[in-house]
Length: 494
Image 1 (cartoon, one colour):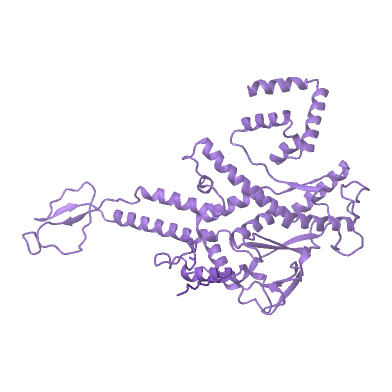
Image 2 (image 1 turned 180 degrees about the vertical axis):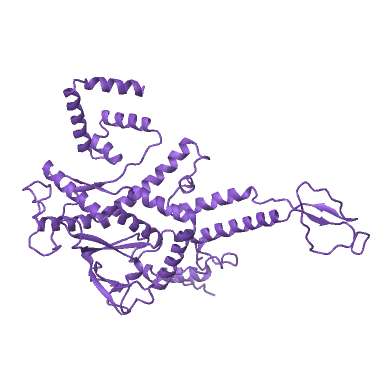
């Protein structure tokens, strides 16, 4: 037989080879998991209320109304909550902001600053800013309208009218591109605000009448925690359940201590029921007299309930929960308690530095949202009525002054930013001598200057230098050596 040569099979195509390999060994799918993303029996109840709603959808008018009411109740009823709100308002606003004009005409700067101070006192600006800061903590937002008050005791008849958050609401639910009383343009800027003429809480007076306020005359101060958020929530909101727990625990400890103190003594017996002890009426009471000696019934003993409350854990629990409460507003525990007895100097200073930084951030927010628009409106009206005239090329900004006779007429003219600024009360140092030495070294080493150091102390550096020059000149007139006073102060410092 002849051998027949076997034909070799052609090699498989690459696509078929890959497909066969996949069928024989299917690829493994590796899935990376996160513990926090897992829903188990243990954490199911904890994450039951988590949702994917937007910022505005999660804070509906009913939700915000409930949170406002509870927050106001807690601040009105709880001493720690009230004290924390007052402390934050006092630390942020203090005695009020002072205007410093930065034009090249010093006489003009002094004139404008003096008139603004007089107007701020006439409208009680400091008091209203403190109220807005309290409302921002308790209600989550503060509203103020820039209106004309003809009875104001100042030529510039601009007044700041505070509006409670309950009054800003939608008059009808189908407002185009609006969020609960605030209507926005197609660029996302507030266009107008709808304000109820009366407070909805005045049930006998509220008739559902609304007024429309243009956005340029309305100041809306709130903290946006999420993108797309248009209304504010109470800043004290995370601490509301903790305040309730603290009050319940305090009442429980107090009730236990009162119960133990109300019982002077108890008669008890070790004899079994129906034993040889003398029969006594159950729950009967006996009046005790001071320095009295008596004989007990046969088989009965005298015992006294020990007053074990408040126990040692009460103060620890109270301090821990108050520390957790203060974290949502960045208030250290020693400031919240008003007690630094358990802190040393270094830890107290470290806690205060974090608190002071949060205050500076809040002051910057107040300047940008409240003070700068208010100053622009006041300055335009002062120019319109001729209270003063703007000098030519005195400002670093090359913009034309406002023209026309309309009240608060809109203009691109603004003196905020490069032309004017505000400075606040300084943060007092625990050791003034060390702080003064540090400031002197910073100035001498050129890492700081007099203006910066004076601003930290809440002072105007020009006023400080002018006063120093006046004192020096007066000392020379009286025949005193200005250098001797400096040497005396240096010796006292050493």
